[in-house]
Image 1 (cartoon, rainbow, N blue to C red):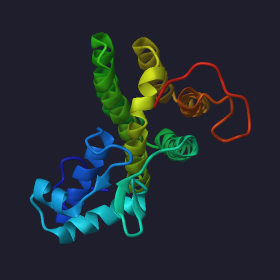
Image 2 (image 1 turned 135 degrees about the vertical axis):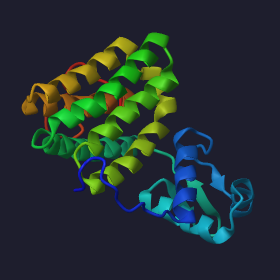
Image 3 (image 1 turned 90 degrees about the vertical axis):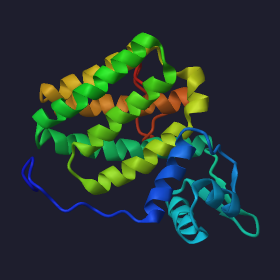
Length: 236
């Protein structure tokens, strides 16, 4: 890995990649809602692109599970069922638990430096009572957490899972925890990293995911299906 400050090649991104980023963002923030049909002509006009790279971008999102294809009808933004919600958090638990294990065996100082601003942003949003900004800060924290693992494949998996997480936002607003509760949970995660307490960190991440499924689906089971749901915990 290049040393900090050392020059490295700048990756070139294709038009399809840039379009896919915009579509993910539109799905994440609800500009494209679950169940919406994607019309090629309309989207190509709005984005100012040709249909070739647009089709490539949309197929990427089909492969990621964000869009679904219906024969003779076209592409639609995927709607998440309770089973989908469970699956998203099973996958997130696997990704973030592995990321945490890598962080604890790597540079915890770097993780502290990168995660502290995300917690500060969450604190500001909590103080303002801004739910949308809280959700953005929450996702930034988890995206950064996975990034701190240094594993690019985990980062790619987390990207799609966090978009699907944001798609749950409409449902989650009714069961979202109090700002102070959400902030305190993230502070405990960061404290566990700083103090080198891996077992506590992994337990916090697990309860983080389990409680979200319980809140969204109103279920009283575990994400992994093998234990009791712990009390307390965060959303997202």
